[in-house]
Image 1 (cartoon, rainbow, N blue to C red):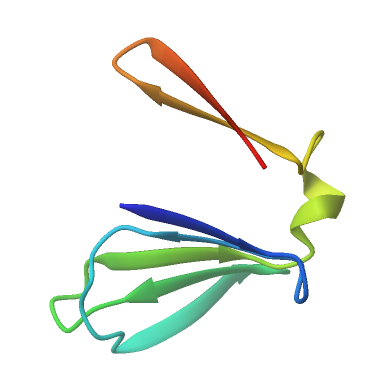
Image 2 (cartoon, helix red, strand yellow):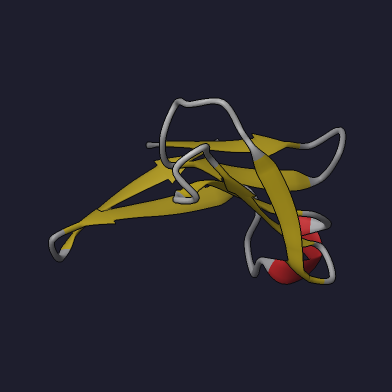
Length: 72
């Protein structure tokens, strides 16, 4: 899994699987879900991400209840 924030486009992308995208669906205004050939989710993209985040300069990554802060 990969999380990418692009400050030039102010978009946040979460890539779940590294496979080609078959189709994309904007499920809400500014929230796009990409699907692979098997119709499973490949990635999720949020447009205008800084408007939806409380602190766009920090990321908290959590695995099984263990928080690991990541700062830019």
